[in-house]
Image (cartoon, rainbow, N blue to C red; front, top):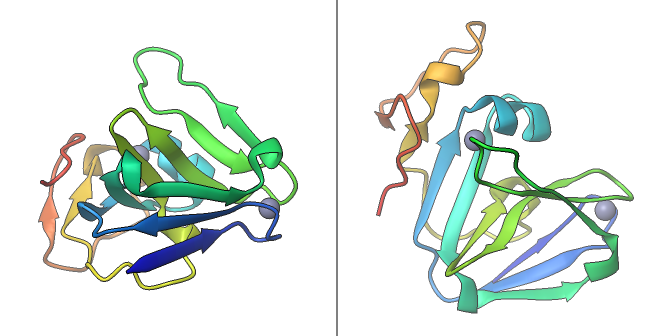
Length: 134
Ligand SMILES: [Zn+2]
Ligand SMILES: [Zn+2]
């Protein structure tokens, strides 16, 4: 199974092989500002991540403590790409996916940081902080 992803302008494209570990929503202020109201975050094994094109188009915003996750985005169109490869895992913005990753979201993370004007209206698990479901 191959899951394709790309940015809005198409300069950056990636492929994910194998089954991702998790799909969750993150409501932290950094995801809100970089990806919208919240971010849908897909996580899997780093070895399953392949950058197809656009290495020279990707800009990374490195985290300043206490933050730990870098932000990759296409510098032509601004599309959020997630952290992409991050040690032993990949963390990609599910908003960049062109294919169905197969699994469905299981949780809302960092809900303590969500804006007051956004209400979560489903029954998925909710975590005040940054818990990533296994
Ligand atoms: Zn782009
Ligand atoms: Zn977040």
